[in-house]
Image (cartoon, rainbow, N blue to C red):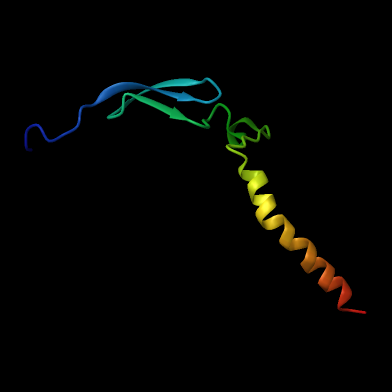
Amino acid sequence: MKADIHPDYFETSVRCACGHEVQAHSTVKDIHIDICSQCHPFYTGKQKLIDTAGRIEKFNRKYGKTKAPQAEEKAAAPE
């Protein structure tokens, strides 16, 4: 192997938004994540919704309006 071409390998802490912290090894010193196995609904069995920057509201504003006119057209067609 060539010398001095590999990145440094650190013992780092991975922090979740819920506050859980795990020690790991990586080339990055500190890692911050939004969701982990301690707060993910699949692992906890609880439904917990994390809305980052209003993505759900943005989706509903963009696509929620198109469903109502289509439903009205279908209801009006059988008459």
